[in-house]
Image 1: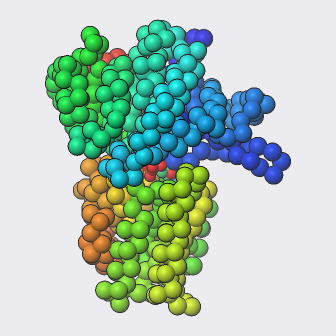
Image 2: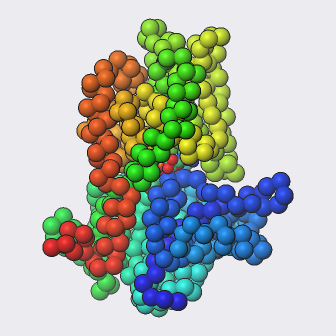
Image 3: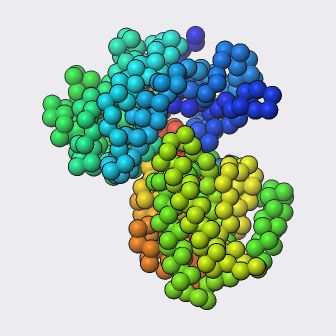
Length: 479
Ligand code: GDG
């Protein structure tokens, strides 16, 4: 192996295996992490280590090699037994860390067998990374599924520079302290050279937890950078808000076929304003709260009936987890209730789409929308908010954004920020957005687009990798 390779480690690979009519087939994975990393790793050499999906056998390797031809990155699969997958993924990752880190402790199931599975699967990922690592490689581990990988890699004697980025929020002390394995996880994270978070709030929460549970760690603060020393090893802790490939959305939205599709969508909606929601089916995305606000809007403001429609795209997610199946049923029941209550033959209040759309169709909807309604009850960043802005080439859409999304920190200047639990305030924001004149819409959207363009995914990657490779950021490197 040549030196200088990037080894990226994440739970999922950018490609997933699924049963097809003629046997297993490969399809692109969904979700924010893969969307963010794909453009970055097209341009880099190295390895991407992850799980391919159920039903993987070695006969898939040839198919897999073909699927990676647009990237210089080689895909390496980690195979997991159904039991490992249940304990590590469904259990520890999605029944403990995901709800806890989104402040939903009442949804956690602190089953000790989940921890055992988490430890052993993290070791498996580390074993796979150790097989391809040498002293020149840099290792970048992603997200909450793999917080122990750094510790196991060091155990293998890997001395490469290693970084960890958390895509979801990091909770405050009084929530994190509920985790029975809190100390082991914090300790393991300090085996990395760089630990990255989405926002200053997450960074602050993490530092608060470290102070409380690892009192032996020393901190030095210099020019806004925090360096911590634990067991003689220095770790940089910093926030790196993730971005999107702005140019891709911006350019795509101007293609003639997308423009034609935008015109069709507008005609189908017969001049009504389009309110757009795009979410993975997940209880953190605030769908029931959003629907309640929408219902409240029609109940309190009759004049808006027949003037707006919500197009709600819900991408299937974690379908084998009972809580997610319950949420699907709850969402669908609520939508049909609202449509039944207010709709008539010429007007459907909510158009519900439960599938993943092709990218061009998604971009056409982002561009055609008059209002984007993005109201997670908590979210690490939320890329949909940024993709909406990048696709708004006519600068006519209004962004209504939850103040609990990481992206609110960067987009507060042009978006209307709302508390998603305050259904009256969300309904008021919808009303204000509906009535907003073109001048104000343009002014706000221009600010938002500038912000999203200037902090794109390439800059995020560059900044993180600069700290990872050199120990300092781009500004210091340029000086
Ligand atoms: C995690 C964190 C953080 C959605 N519908 C379709 C579709 N999508 C794509 C979007 C977007 C992605 O899925 C969703 O990303 P988000 O950031 O909104 O949310 P998570 O999946 O929860 O991501 C999140 C992110 O990681 C990155 O760090 O922002 O906070 O939870 O890219 O475009 N894609 C296609 N069709 C659809 O119908 N093709």
